[in-house]
Length: 271
Image (cartoon, rainbow, N blue to C red; front, side, top):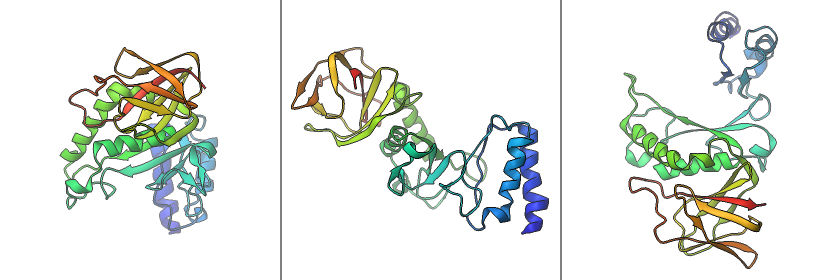
């Protein structure tokens, strides 16, 4: 093991850094040995103090079997939800959720359509991750000849279609004071997640609401406005029982080619 680390692994990692000047180094496979065996401390000392990218590079938490979600510039949960010891990772440390589209990480030719997450499930995973302050690393596993499997292409196009319309709630926003409020009340309300940017709060509803949507968390002031992303129409709202009740027009629909009925409401003038 010593010979592998000294003569193969460390020289290759240094060559990678010196040749390509990466801004992020994402290590893996650390779980079998402690960081002392991998000589992680020595390598990281070189990386941050002597390498050409020491002032800008970010590293993850996979440097030895004792380091995950303990050390590193950002944590890398994997099919693990969004908490560590009951504390939301976004509140404790920068983090990234790592998952594949199917049950395998990478391409598995034995998987069928039923093994893949739907476009809606993947969008919900993305939304939940961002609302909790994380980044989503979604694995795309190529086939042996380098092709992206058709199932994965289809999911990426569906996610892209949703983001094209609703991306302002995902790209750039930060977690709000409350990441979610369970189920939205109303005839067809779905789970609600929140993000925020500037003076706007985004309420992301995981299924199409009915004619009314009650939100408990936003505290509106006079002059607060509500709009549905993708529509220029201002929506009517009023306070009801301490909640913000939004009236949903009958024609508030996602584009006809959308596979994901996840709706984003933009709220301004709320706390």
